[in-house]
Image (cartoon, rainbow, N blue to C red; front, side):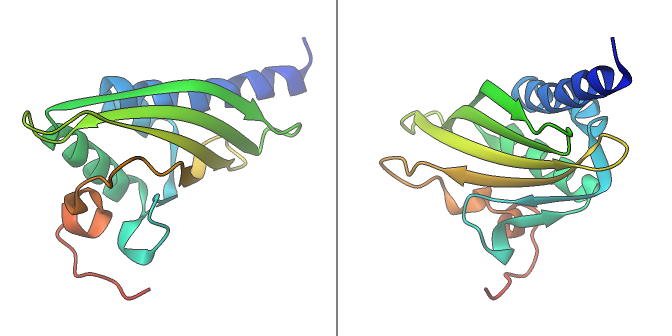
Length: 151
């Protein structure tokens, strides 16, 4: 097996581990896949829903999923670029913010960039609009109690 094939397999596993960790709420596994300067651009595509830094992201995602009555994230497939620097992933996330809420199922297309070390440095989330929006407290600013950013 060539070094390039091994490198691509390791990068694919990094992306798979990221999604598995978010689904199972294994924050150590998620942390092992992220670069320190990781940036997550959320589905709202604005400053309020952008998270910068590995530690801030881990705090954000663990807080959001921890507040939910139900959370599941299923990775459907991942494509890796020929050089392994970019990945495209489709995922289905199901959330029930409170026990009284209806289950909200959202389909996401995720664009990821990996750095020279094979760690995820960027996640940009695109989604199909569900019948209703998730609660406002899911944004990074609201979850981390930051002052809202102007777009």
